[in-house]
Image (tube, rainbow, N blue to C red; front, side):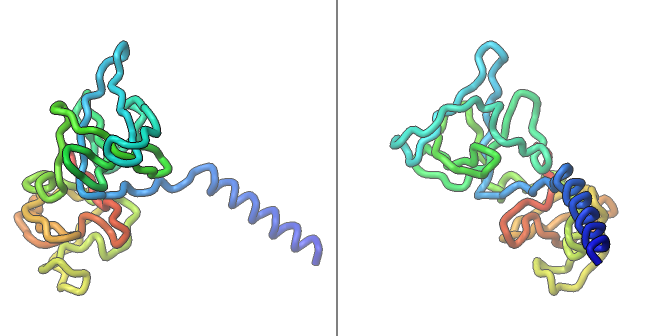
Length: 196
């Protein structure tokens, strides 16, 4: 009995270490939109002063290039870096500034480009991420998981977003079929990739 227990424990530990070695990458939180920064140069990188509140409680100064990568869902043009914006107030943006999803405020600049999701997604090609539940890959007649499905879509299927309604986008496929897919999940995390 003791040998069986030791064997089970060994298998469990080996499986746990294999899983720990390749953690599943969390999907990107959506927030209210994104802000694009210019990356600067190697000699003079762009830096961001992070505050607990607009103009109050400076907590950090970081290089824009050290912001969490959003490339899984938001591949950006060369020389720009996107950051998730969770709130906006009087020329200030609340962004996620580290991999722990901590948030802080930055002062807006004229070189920053801010996009709300409703305007960013409209008329852009988007693709579904892999590893989602089956219901995310169905093109539906209306923006609801209980709506009738029109056709299944595969991982990476490229569609064009036409209209945003809450957590759903109306899309058209390459075969001209139109319907609805979710663009974020119930936890407000992106389930699509959008190219800027």
